Length: 309
Image (cartoon, rainbow, N blue to C red; front, side):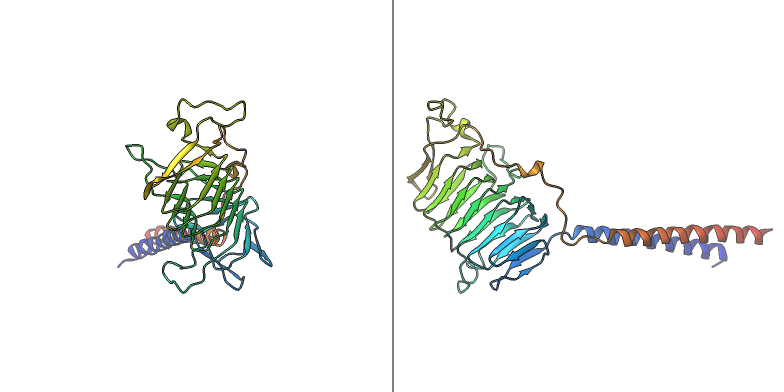
């Protein structure tokens, strides 16, 4: 190999190194999600953006990932921040109850003032219960329908399975459907929420729905009218248990307009990832490689020009 070929190979190698470094950084940027766990002993793993004070867990910033809850009798306060999922579950209190019957069920968890988005399931509760969800915004931008107008079941807002005694109030909930109750759920209270695309109940018990805003109300009841300037429609919003159509549920005072629940989308900054890439060091390395490549190239050109003379 002559000197010109060697020089060209050397320059190509330097440029390849710069490209490889860029690809490495892009790969690191993609790894932005994490599993966060609140352990049964109260400790937190997976993030430094949740502050613990006894049984109170408060967000101090936006978080990317999903939270596994393994402790009962706690309060999770989003403080207006966002939990951005990775297409899995946002808040999960199931604690492996379905897979491992010996695992302890989780009871009395409050989730409030939290925006949850980009999740397959916003909140999932298997077994246990007596939970409270207040002032939460479970993003409904993922709600989709197929060609016949039916919900696609790709994303669920709040999922309750064999989970009873829960209170859902002052939340905006979107999903396909927004709320799903199945297999032994009972004594759940759902009042004064914005519910996007309804609920689905199967093998459920005694449930209370009242004074909720239903996004599809006028599609189902186009001839409804207001009751004496009350802000409520005169026809109940009714639905049945999918496993027993003889069991009917209804909201007797469906609201005509959405409730003034904060739209966190307009007031929060962009979500920051837990594992932030080291962008600044990468830029220094890239600039250094490029400067070296240019310097060597210029030097070799002068060298060969001088040799030619």
